[in-house]
Image (cartoon, rainbow, N blue to C red):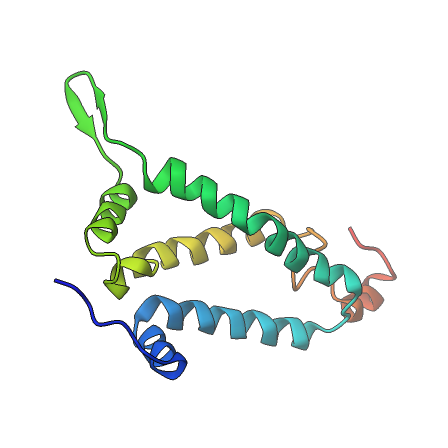
Length: 146
C-alpha cells in the first residue's frame, strides 16, 4: 500500500506534526530551551554542542543506518536473533513512503529521553549540562564549583 505524499511544505508540516514522535521531540526541545533560558549564564561555549552535533550527525546517521538499521539476523546455537529496529526498518524499505515507518517509533523516543535523563543524573557536574552549577548558585557556595 503506497502512502500519498504531501505536495506542499505546509502539507508536509501538518503530516509531520500529526505523528506522535515529532511532537514528543519538539516538546523536549522547547522544554530544554526554556530550562536553558531560565538558568541563564549563557556563554559561547553553549554553542559547542550544537556545532558538534551538526558536524558529527551525518556520520553518526550513516553509521547507525548501516550497522544498526541494516543489521542482518544472526544465527547463534541454532536460534535466529533479529533486532526490533532492523525488523522495523525493513518494513520501511517495503514501503518507503509510509510516513510512520520513516519517523522514529514512539517507544524509541521514550528510550532516548530516558537515556538523556540518566546521563544527566550520572554526570551532574558536566559543564555543558543546562542546569550544571548556574552562576546564581555559585554565590551560595562562595565560588566553589565542586
